[in-house]
Length: 336
Image 1 (cartoon, helix red, strand yellow):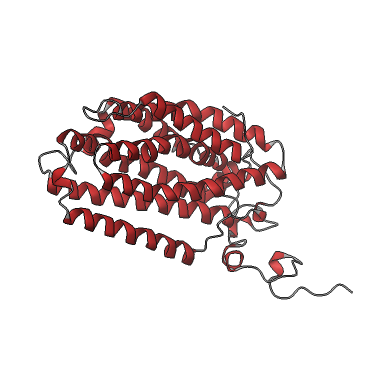
Image 2 (spheres, rainbow, N blue to C red):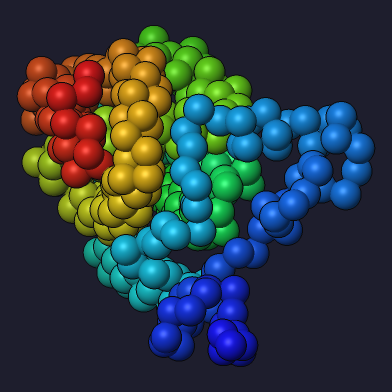
């Protein structure tokens, strides 16, 4: 007679105690229960059920067991908060130290204008990407994917908060420069920001969960954020703004963790079904031109500085290289 499963039976006969990460993450989606007629306890044609059925269950990206995916970092909520708290301590200490030096008052006026045109308006696109990450988390077919995406959304909240804090500090130091009150107009009207605005606003209505995931994590994040976090950080340092450079480096660390789980999810999907290569490649090809245009717009802004300019061609080439590296580690080498 087969032995009766006891503790942790949801994992099957694994012959080990699940990790804290697995215990707090595994199979938490009520709407993914087996034998269901619809995701939620309502009519199958109720709008919510039709939404999840269409954009999650019937997504072209399929796997027989999404619960088998694991985030390489295996973060729990407790571990995530502890890690991010350490980073926020660094941010607070940096801001305090540079404030005591009178850093903002000593910035070159031309660079202050660059911060006003490029740095402080970035809270708008980052908020848009946060909404995309939150949507992926909401509609993903596994709680392992949901947790990773929700932590990513929280990363964006942190980035927006850091930039908002700096925006207020810069307004105090330069009250006539247009900080705080002018960024929305810049985001909505400045020519170089419009490709970024266009691609993010259009991606916010990419309702299929796999398309939203691919657009954000395989295309936008490595491409756009290469220019913003890497090229802008280098340009800031070259123009004597070490605080902006250090803050961007601090925030960039979150991108590396996101890249790890995104690549792992792609490889998992491809291992489950080789047809998923074509699905992911389709989404990447669809959104890459928009991301390239966005990266070029940001790079062009950094190339018009009166002091130490960024090389727009090098910045956009680096952005494409960052995306290609992401695709290569995701099992999608050669996808354009």
